[in-house]
Length: 88
Image (cartoon, rainbow, N blue to C red; front, side):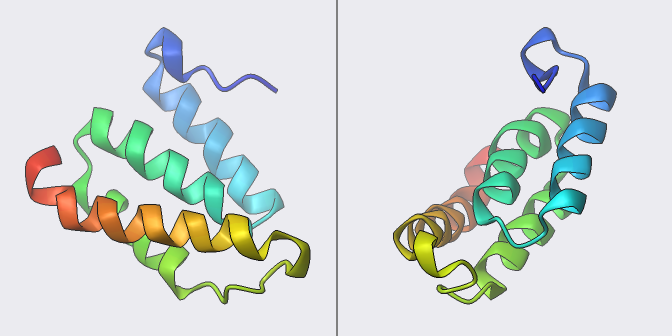
């Protein structure tokens, strides 16, 4: 499914990504992408922080085959949280 974000339809985009998180709540990249694209564009600092903190709370081995990917998502989340003042 293509996320409608590039078209600027924020409500549809949010619904699509929230559904993706609902289907796989342990996949870290979805939250990071949602935070750095949707939350920033929507100016929703509270959602941004919540998504990134949830990402950081995931264990590195939430999916044993994806440990490097999860660690990378967590690095991105930490950096984005540090950049929040510049983004909002």
